[in-house]
Image (spheres, rainbow, N blue to C red):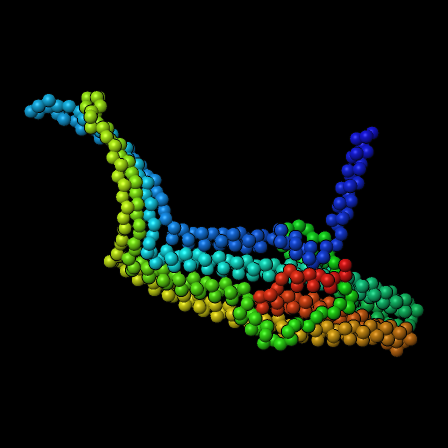
Length: 446
């Protein structure tokens, strides 16, 4: 009995946790799920960790290298008796050596060190861009679901209203106050909205699957926007400032600038193939030699301990034009990096312009659709009343219902698009942070 009670208690506790997890999730929680589970962001994080090692690898070329080596050699000499006694002589030599090499002048190694340091900056900028992209991707997937839900609910509401209008048309036809045309029109609209409802259900499932791909699990119910929410205008309110920020602070631009600097150092590194090198070399070794004649150890056994310290230099003279070719290649790649930087800068500026215009025009659309929603509701009410008193026909009511549904969907889409344009504007300017996502999250109906 006690075991049964414990099992029942555990089941109730598990059910409570399941119920808690089933609560609607907001945008900020969805973003945190994406931080932990998004494979694309995980790849960017791993790339950043790998990029940090470039600085260590570049610095290694300036530090000394220490090598410990050894070997064992056995030599056997057989002397055949020609004019005297023959015999066999064997010797064994064990060699150990410890060598230290410290680069003193290696211009290519110094350039490689600078490249490694810059590579860390580039990977950090790329990771920061990946963080911003994740905020935008999560927000877009979140609002896509909300818009699909709004569309589906609107279609279902419209279907209910058309069904009522269809029933009314059938009753009026039966009593002779309307024609069969009203019934056919209402039936056609009803069939059409049913088809649209199926399409809306499929679209919602696709949108939910898109968010699932990002957060790594099936999304639960999402918190919608508050009714009548007001979207804020961009600050500052001058497009030129946003464009200027995008051209300078956009993380893609920063990464491209660093890549250009790396390309310049690559030219210097490849040119170093023509330069002399100078190293400090120090070594300490030990050589053990033992010899035998006829299986007996001779007095030739001994130990040699050589120690040396000196400078080692090298001057390249001719290498088949390989260095010259690599220099030309590096110069061409530097020109490519410079053009890539300009392309990235222009794209960032264009993205800022489009997003700023999207926010400004979106705010105006929201105002217009809010006014249109009020007018559409009034028009629908007037047409229903006119239909009841006989001054309006059934198609007028159906058109008014369609207009209200379309206006409501357009209003919801305008709000979502304007919010997303604001996030993309900050991303283009290189200032999008989790705090900005928290501000958007505050617009939800918690």
